[in-house]
Amino acid sequence: MNHLEKVLVCLPEKERGALASFLSRVSANKITEIRLRAEAPSSVTYEGRNVYLFSGAEVRFSEQELRGIVSRLCEESIHTYSESMKQGYITLDNGMRIGVCGSAVCDGDRILGLRDVTSLSIRIPHIFRGVADEVLPIICNGDKIQSALFYSPPGVGKTTLIRDIAMRLGGGAKRFRVCVVDTRSEIYIKEFFSHSLCDFLDGYPKGLGIEIATRTFSPQVVICDEIGDISEANAILSTQNSGVPLIATAHGENIASLMLRPNIKILHDAGIFRYYIEIKRDNGGEKCIFSVTDTMRRLE
Image 1 (cartoon, helix red, strand yellow):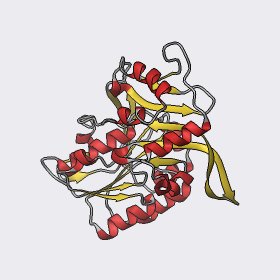
Image 2 (tube, helix red, strand yellow):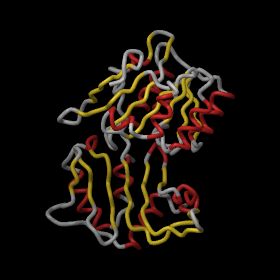
Image 3 (cartoon, one colour):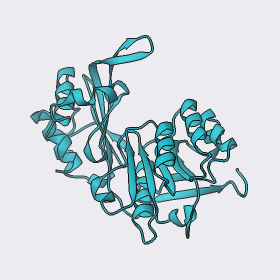
């Protein structure tokens, strides 16, 4: 069962039919997200646009229906995911992540749980091989891997790209010891990594994961997704005296806006990354287009 089928079988029958009719007429590889809302229109992100009418009508769910959908997606073991739900997401097998919005139950700044689930953002992972073909020779020349930060707005394909980089570095003709800090369990897909020299730290905070990787696994490169706030950047910085190159991603529209973010500026000032590589999509959304900034020359 593929990811779209897994989502559809968890929906109530009436709404399932309306969405299935639309999904059957479009390319599954161009669907990046299905968003379900309580008492509001649901939508499918297709080719970068938000489709919210299906056979000319909106698809809506009740809060009770959303809870049932979450439970079925989690195979009736929603309690297993209670800790990550406090952080706003659930990650299922093979990189499928569900963002969860609702009313938080808090004790001061600490989230104890969620009630009244109001929205689900179901991100549909895609297995694409070869998306790193153009940039791989830049970050890996012979036996030398260079640190790089890939950036783009959300939904352009950063996770897909670094998954391919990890697989290619760990499973290519010249196989490197790759350690992947997979904080949200989105990168690992079994069929991608069954023949690679990749080790995964699943669910670890990035700073702690990088520290454990460099201290106990002697990796030739560390890979992680979506560098977060200043505390996370500081944690990464404290572990980067090992000389192990880091390949990571971040949200950013362009190099100028990226450098306005304090967390990235900290890492940049410390010289963590040699390359800053912007990811865009061509007009049809089929191909990644890369713009490379090499800090050994100058930062524009």
